[in-house]
Image 1 (cartoon, rainbow, N blue to C red):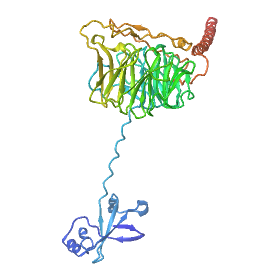
Image 2 (image 1 turned 90 degrees about the horizontal axis):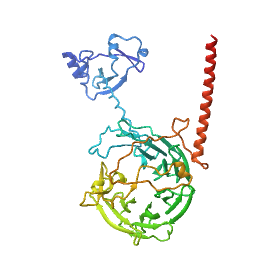
Image 3 (image 1 turned 135 degrees about the vertical axis):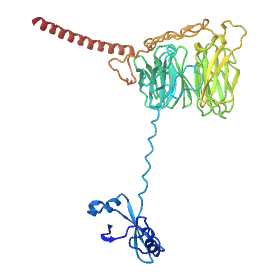
Length: 515
């Protein structure tokens, strides 16, 4: 067989693996011309070098043997140093490379979670439908106090989305919100509904801006810029009638703000001497309660009168844990619950109008620490079991309900435990609140139990825009006048379209009559 190597022609014997006596004899001496290619390696200190095949265009015509040998990728020349004979050994091709691994599955959409009934206990199905519309993780959620089917979510994607959950829960994934509120330039960490005005939602972002939205129009109607909060906002809470908001900031100040005027009514510098975050909430009779840390990193709780913020009405030190205490206030019983992330306990205090104002009641303890805590509204409690509060404790892989009950021997309705509480109906519209009206929540009795009203659809007036509405903060004007102006413009366009169609119809009728 002829092979081209370095421009020279060589003629070699080819061993096929059939070895005769002569081949074995010659191969054993390192010689042979064609009988026993398998013995070509018999010479001592054999040296090998590989010669790659060339293409058919480079080689020219090939013999049948050469054509058959092209399926091999290379050959090896073996030179026996004892006799100088050359043997050609044909090697099998290397095994084909393994197929590439399949691409990894696409990650699930960010910013979602399952919504399940509180009666559905046990393991959650992996294929349970989810609410997933954000493009980044969700940082805060808030159920609407006036519609049990509506929930708002704030995310790292700088948007706030409002979702409407159908009666009976989800059967398919929910990816399209009712409205998307865009106005923040950094992630949104806080969302809070107005307690008495319908469709009024507050959001606070890491851009140090607070926006108040009219969800019915999808527009930001009030803006508290970075001139009010020069640093990160830690917490925001509405007063009971929604006239004021209370905020805590990284600049170590607690502020009482009238959001419609954009003015700071009162503020307290360093309510707690420590450097850790502070939380603040409104409690009864216009007071505020704050949680923070002392200079020695001891956790503290303090009660303040908003009209006199020089000194606290009460200040108590609790322990030296590092978790920030989250306060939950029940205005019906005047009890405040303190839950800390990483803690395994819940402390609760009673607030009174007389000194010492803040009374420690007791502490609930468990074995496992909590990663988060949710609070059930009063109308969702079991009245016949004397349940005055219910928390949902978030573990690493599960959620555990914790009920706070007051043992009573009688099965009758306990009026002292369940005074009239806030109902699901709003006291004001968004336009009325923006014009300056204030009103407390509309109260209902739980004596006969709570019967949820029929689900009310959340309607958003988008005008002619059927896609997502990008809301920009409005510096002046009232939202009611702007909404009326948009409706008037739309009506004018519709009237012009109707007139044009009437003219075309009259023209067609005249043509038909002429024929």
